[in-house]
Length: 258
Length: 268
Image (spheres, rainbow over the protein chains, first blue to last red):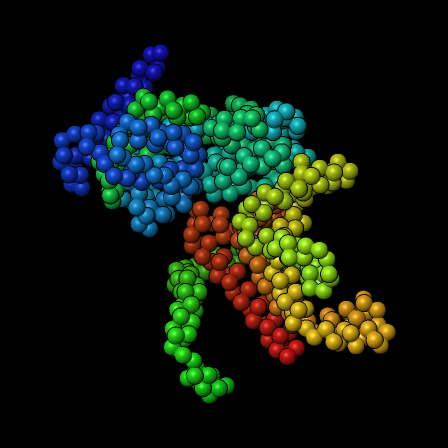
C-alpha cells in the first residue's frame, strides 16, 4: 500500500517536472493549461511489446479527452528510432530500451516508465520438461532465443553470462514475438521472452521464472519529441502514461514499476 | 546495334516512352541509393568477414536446391495444367498461384502448421523418424521452394500452351509413347520457358525472407541466409546491412546476366 502511494507521488512529480521542461523549451506555446484544450491527433510510436497495454491506454485517453485521437505505430524500437530520425511524424516515442531512445536526436528528456523482466516460456504442459535456465544448454532440447541485435536477445546474453551457461539455440529470432510464436506453436521446448509476452499468450504458453533474470532488467523510456505536431497532446499523453491509471494498465499487462 | 536501337526508339510514341523511362527510374533509383550510401572506405574489411561468406554460400546453396525441387515438381504440374483434361483445372491453377499473393510470413506459418513438430504431417515425421524440418537447412529449401514454385509453373505452363502440339502428335503417330514424347519433343521445345521460369524461381528463392525466418528460424551457418543477415544487421549497424545487400545484388546480377547470355540466347 505504501509502495503504491510512493509510486503515485513519484509519478505526479515526474509529470510536473515534465510539464516544467516543456514550458522552458521555446517550441511550446505558452498556453496556460495543457489538459483542457486538447485537440487533433496524437501520433505515438511505441515498442511492439507495448501493443496491448498502449492500445488500452489510448482508448482510455480518448474517452477522457473527447475530440482527441490517439494513433499508434507499433514496431521494433530500433526501426521506430530510424523512422523518427528520417522525419516520420511522431509526437511521442516509447522505446523498449534506452539505447534506441538515445538514437533519437530531437527529443525532450525521456522518463523511464516501466521495467520488463525475462521469463522462460514453454508450451502448455511443458513437453520438454524444462526446469530452469540450465536446460538451455541441452543440445537435445529445441530452444529459441532472440537474436543478439534486438533488445530481448541482448538481455538474454547478459543473463546467460551471469549464469555461466552457454546456450545451444536452434534459432535466433528477429524479435520477441517471433520467439513467442515458436513456443505457442510448440515448435520449440523453450524460449526466453519477456514476462509481458508470457501473459499475453497465457492460454498457449506457460512461464517459468528464474533467479538470474534480475541481471538483465529492461527499462522502457518515454519522451515527447521536439518536432511534434501536437506538442500539447504529446505532453498530456505522456503524463497519462505516467499517471496512476496508466501505471495500473501497464502493471496488469505484466510490467514492473520503475 | 546502336543504330538498330535508335531506329526503334525513334518509332516509339512518347506516350509509351515516358512511362517506360519513369518505370526504369523507379526500379533503379533505390539501387542507386544503396550504392550512394555504401561505406566504400571500410567495404573490403566488412566484406571479408566469415559471416558474410557463410550466409552467401548458404543462400546460393538453398536457392539452387529449391530451384531443383521446383523443376522436379513444377514441370510435371505445369504439364498437367496445360495438357491434361481434368475437372476444376481453373481452380487448381488459381490455387497454384496462391503462394504468390500470400504474405510470405503467412506462408511460413502455414508450413509450420503442416510440417512443424506439431503439424499435420510433421508430427508423424517426428514420431516415426525423429526428424523435424523447422530450424534445418532442409527447412530453408522447403520454405523457398514453396514461395518460388508458382513462378516456374506459370512460366512453363505458358510455354506449353504456346508450343505447337502438332510436333507431339507427329511423334505419337511415329510410335513414341507419351513419356518419350515428353522427354524428346515437348521438353526441348519449351526449354526457353523452363529456363526463364527457373531463373525467376531461383531469383525469388534467393531473396526469400518471410517464409524462411518463420519456418526455418535463424541460426548462422544453418538457416541464416543473406536476406535474414541483412534484416538483423539493420537492427544494429545499417552500414553492414548496405554492404550485405550490395553483395547479394552483385551476385544475383552476375548470375542472372550470365545465365541469360549462355542459355536463352543459345536457344534462340
